[in-house]
Length: 151
Image 1: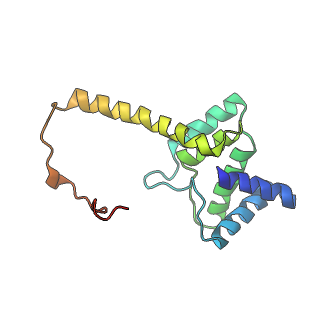
Image 2: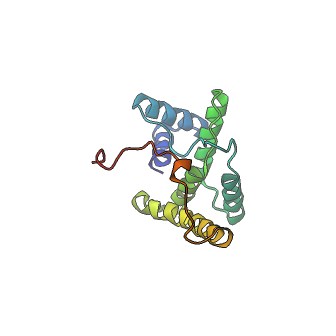
Image 3: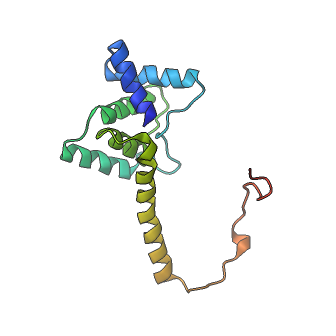
């Protein structure tokens, strides 16, 4: 969200079209050793959830400058030969920018979206699996930090 807001600041400050504002933002992030959040996905090359959010935004008449900038950034990645699709978190961030939702509280919306998936997962487990079943701990390998290594 903050990156998109910065991109629109660059657009206004330098009187740039969206495509050049996208390029300027990505160059600024690269120079600062940062990545553009909200792009790329481990599974989807074109996230279907993002496509649906875009359609809903158009239908609701809220496809504004933040979403258009997000599209310009995605197009920039494609033009540079590194196609990184706008993912669902990036689309949600752009949508939350349109009504000027404060970035500090936007994580609550991301959490709400995940809760629906957790409820569906719980219901699937409850309806398809035995309660209190034994889970083979050897079937999964944890490679993260141990409790002693955590701050």
